[in-house]
View: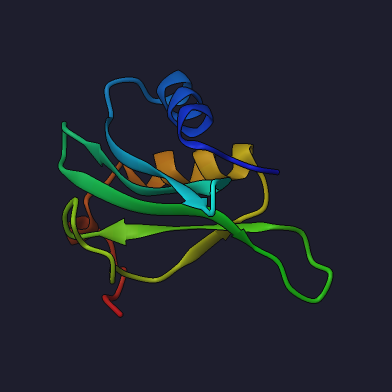
Length: 109
């Protein structure tokens, strides 16, 4: 499933309103491929990087990546996490946004 910027923003705002977004559409030769960027919780400064240009291998379902980030420019981040649906992705992102990375035991890669 193709997850673009507006679809992701709307789904996150529905589950956890008030987040700040810096998302950009991924487009290659005019073909929309997904979205990437950062989502920040202004209440605790927790930041999550997301990329929905899905990864598919060995016949497995499409996977979308998300992870903690230090700030709204950090592309290296922490451990990658994977989701196979919009619902799973939104649940994972909003769970990470509950706590800043400094309060959890996630290792920087």
